[in-house]
Image (cartoon, rainbow, N blue to C red; front, top):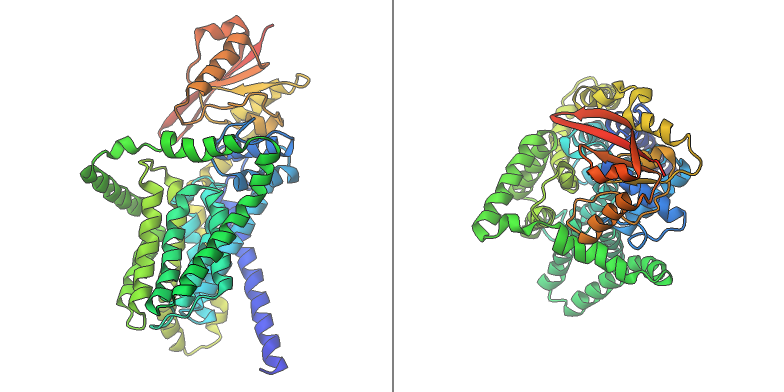
Length: 503
C-alpha cells in the first residue's frame, strides 16, 4: 500500500468520524430530554440514577446508603455526569452523544462488511433516526441506551467471524474483549445477559466444529477471566465499605426474586402466549426499526453466501436477548432498546441494494451529496415523530419541579424525601443529597422500604416531603402543605404535593 493510499484511507476515516459525531449530536439534541432544548429530563428513572451517582460522588455507598436496583457502572457514569453539571443533565447529554456516536460508528463499521462506504455513509443517518425516534428510546438516558455501543461491537465481532461460509477462528483478543463487554453490560443491567450467553456459545461452536477441545477450554477461561476483571473495581469498592452483602442483596437477589414478576406467566402455555404478545406489540409500536430487524434476519437466512452457523447466530442472539429481557413479565417500552442492534444487518443488506442503484446513476457526483441530504431527512423524521419534541414547549419557570425547587431553596441546607413515587427530579434541580436510604418509592415490594418511609412521615425526619396523588392523614402532624401542582403526559394525570416541616 502506497503512502497516498494510506493518506486516503486516513482521510476517509476522519471524515466518517466527524460525520457520525455530528449526526449523533444532532439526533440527541432532538430525541433526548437531557438535551439543552428541553427544560429538564423529567423521567423519574434517570433522575433516580442521577441521585445515585450524586450520592456516590459525595461519599454515600450505593445500595447500602441509597437504594436503587440497577448496576454500579450505570451509577458511576451518572456520577461522572453529576461532576460535569451538578443540577442539570448537561453531563448526561454529553454521555448520550458519546454513546450514540459509538453505536452509530460501530453500526457503520458493521455495514461496511455488507456494502460500500458510500452506501453506509448515506444509510447510517437513517439507521440512527429509525432507532432514536422509536417509542423504545423513550425520554433518553436509559441504562440500555448506554450499553448499545458495547452490544453493537459484540455483534460486529460475530458478523466479522461469520462473514463467509467458513467462519474465521476467534482470536484470544476477540474472546477477551467479549468478556470485558459482557462484564460491563452485566454490571449495568443483568437482563442483557442472554445476548452474551448466545455470543459465547457461537464462539465455542466454531472450535467445536473443528474439534479444537483445548481452544474451547481456553476460550472459556479467557472469557471468564475478562468478565471477572470488570468486577474487581466493585469488589474493592464494596469490600472497602463493608457493603458486599448489600451489593448482592439489592442487585442480584432482589432483582431476580422480588422485582421480576414471574407470577404473570405461571404456566408454559401462558408464558409462551405472553412472550408472543409482547413481541407483536413491540413490532407494532416500533415499526421504524423492527422492520429492519426482520429484514436482517430474513436476508441472513436466505443469503447463500452465509453458512449455517451465521444463520444460527442471528437467531440465537436475538432470541436469547429477547427472552432474557422479557421472561420476568415486565414490558416497559425502553426494555427493548438492546434489540436495536439487530437493525444493523438489515441496513447492511439494504446497503447492498443501494450499491446496485448508485452504480447505475449516470451522474457519479450525486452520491457525494446524498449523505448530507440523508442527514437532513433524518432530522426531519425525528422532529416530526419523536415523542419528546412536544415537551420542548414546556415553560421551565412554570414546570412544577422548578416551582417546588424555588420554595425549597429558600431554606438553608434543606433535606428532602421523595415518597409515594419514583424520583420526580427535585433532588436533581435543588442539588439535595438524600439523607434516607429509601430516598424514593421503588417499584418493588419491600417491607423495609415501606416502613422507613412511614417512619419518615411519622417522625418528621426531613424538612420537605414530595408526594404524588395521595398522602396519609398523619402527615399533618409534622408537616404543612405548601404547594401542589398537576402534571400530565399522554393519558396519565398526576397531582404532586410538597410538604414542609412545621416543627
